[in-house]
Length: 189
Image 1: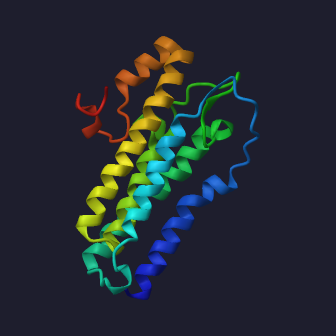
Image 2: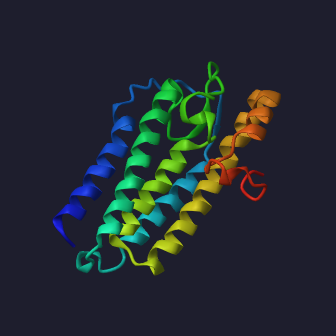
């Protein structure tokens, strides 16, 4: 694989991760915590590892692969930076709410309810386009979506329990992960 592909992978991944590393969140004791979302995290980790199971070092991505991967990484970074900023002190790994939690609907949360998972999917596709054949990328995407589904259901459940009608209206008006396409009934339970 050419060096520029490795550079794109490294830069895209580091720039995507950076806002989470830089976030200065003070973790309070959550008033609501649901550890079932960790199963989703495990599946998402498996999905990324599936991409690296082929002989990636022998791949020679074409120009369009590089351009498409760049677009996915750019979108992923934009969503991770704006999403983490919009969440602010509410940003955490577990599906949890503290007593001062508010329903975030600004920034990318105005057009998708789970922009960080959308950004993670973009990282998966950006990486997969460069290093993985379709027979690895397709199942990796399915495993990722299964993990994201677990996490989104858990998070939506605790948000619905806390914010009631406010969350119901938000849920009705804003798709889960995919703007425009996400408005179809199949994507918004």
